[in-house]
Image (cartoon, rainbow, N blue to C red; front, side):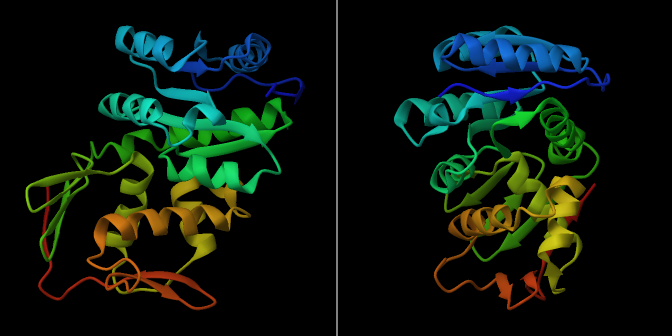
Length: 251
C-alpha cells in the first residue's frame, strides 16, 4: 500500500546509511525525501532480493521495509537471516490501524513498526530512537553470558545455545534481555521497559512489550505456557527470575 505522509520542515539529525525496501516507487521516493532532508544517506530497493544485493555491498545502519515484505514467509525469513548477520536494525512501515499486521511484523523480528500516515518529524524521531540503541544492542561495550538449565544465552553473539541448536536473538530481544539481566528478580513496569529499550517516544506502545516477551518465552522457557524465568507481574509489568546458581560472565 502507498505511504501517505504529512511533510513538514525537519531539522538535521545524526548521519547514517538507511536502506529502504518497498515495491512502490512513490513510497520509496517519499521516504527518501524525508530521510535525506533529515541528514541521512539513503539507498533504496524495490524487492527483498534487490535489498539483499544492496546490503551485501554497503553496511547499512538501518533497513526500512514495507510491512507486507516482513510477513512470515520463507523468502522473508531467509532475507532476515541474512540481515541479522549484518547486525542491521529493521523498521516496518504499514497500515496504522492494522493491529494484526503490526503484531505479525514485530513477531517476524523487526525492531519497530510505524503506521501510515505519519509526519516527517515522527518518522525521523523513530529512526533516531532505533539508531541510538544499535551500539548497546550489538554488545560492543559488555559481553553477557547467562546459563538457564540447558540454555546458554550469549548477548554478544545474539544467540541462545540449546542442546547443540543455535537460536537467534534479534537486536531488540538482546537489548530487552540485557535490561532484565541488569535488574534481576525485580518487578519492572511497562513504562520503564519501554523507555529503557525503545525510548521516551514509545510510552503508549505497551503492546510491544507483550509481543517481545512472548517471543522471548518461546526461545528461553522450557514450557512457554508456564514460564519459569520471564514472569508476569499483574498490573505492573514483568520480572526476570534469575536462578540462584546464575552462571554469567561479563567482560
